[in-house]
Length: 64
Image (spheres, rainbow, N blue to C red):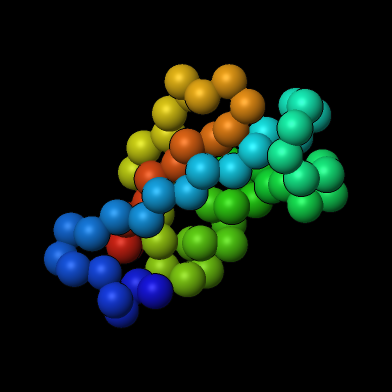
């Protein structure tokens, strides 16, 4: 995926928070730290996180 992004391109991840109603079971949800660790191994770094969604994380990553 990193090789397909244009210069300055970003990757947005929207995922359900653990413990909130609706969405997939908690065992299929990830914390922002878990997501960031996985994406760091792929060469991404967290640029911005938003908390305006009541049940989801909204994370934006860029290339290191």
